[in-house]
Length: 382
Image (cartoon, rainbow, N blue to C red; front, side, top):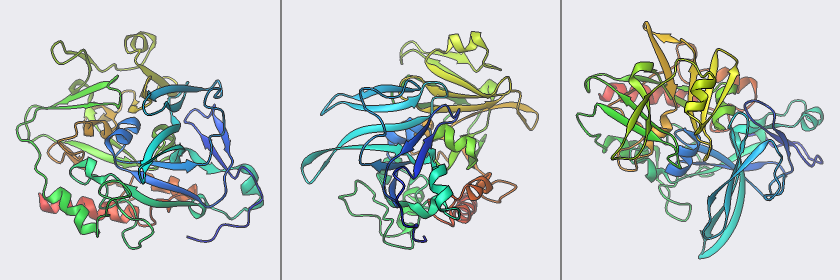
């Protein structure tokens, strides 16, 4: 990572949502630290295999009086109130406040989703060759143990230097010594057999999903995307999806004793939106492309290009992070998901968007190659 240019600009960064009604200046000093969290709470609030957050000294607005374009949701009351702030139009999870314990003391924090960040026009004007990857510094990974099977930890991040330790638990616990230790989590994990249903849900369980199959030999393709739209939608730089026939994907209503399966709509017209009022539905391309998110906890739930077909079958694309909500079964679901690489990049889909935005190196410069190697490793092991 190159050294950032000397800085006198008070707001060198900005945070943007998918619909771009929120473009919020971030006052900070560069380089800006960030971390990658693999915990269940973060994954099920973004829908991703991990989340990326940048800690801030203060939010760019008052907690009690956020901009009218942001929705404030109370997520915890104890030991003190914690909030998330999501776009009230497109649902992007942008900011949060939280509390944590360090050295026995309760401490407050606030963060912005790293996937929303970009260099501000003022900073770029003064530093025309600067890239975001030069001023965002991933300092650690944490809570890999929540994934059970290791999740993305063996390929995401930099295992070659001490400045990006991968903590199995919290940051005050010993980190995993090497990439092989992360790989061992998957090698030593066994998925349940005979499953014909796979359930997922968001952090608050306000949105529940189920995908089904005829027998356990059937698998659905899982992909990663780094395009700008996916990044802004899930507020994370790499976003995972599973391609499921629309007739095999359902929303689940009710509790364990009175469940009702609701068919996935072909399109999100006003009738469909009213039926699923627990979600914000945002059409990024009106009449063609829709994104869904939980109206309460902000979790990104799905992407849907109307009438998209794969092998002649209409498909929808839930985010795979929601299927890691069960804390006992892992998050990769190799018995259900066939993780594949992009035909264009050979690794992560549309990684060229990240390169063009100067952010492909935020996680690590070789994430694309690492993911490609990982896919080959799991296919050879099966």
